[in-house]
Image (cartoon, rainbow, N blue to C red; front, side, top):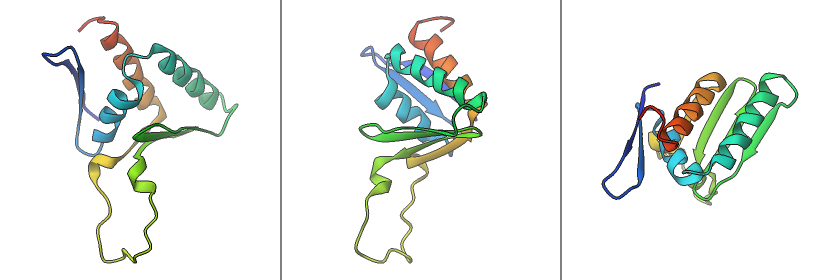
Length: 123
């Protein structure tokens, strides 16, 4: 998974991720932003999961929700959780930019890089 963080001309942050992982970048911007408290909670959760003290951590957000397990991280747009009365078997109701999975270690590395970025370390 490749990614790049940038500041835009208006003081905002941008996170660009490789194909299949775009949702992680949007989740970082929308649900984490510059909130280091959220990052510390996530690092603590990852430590518990890695130590096998917990099986799963769910963190619902406004637009995207995060699920962490002992092996992986899943970022999923909340819009994918809607239920429709119609039969959608013949329709493609999936968008690559709405769902992303990666290993827990890779996700921890992304969070470490994001924290350094928002702190303006090495960027």
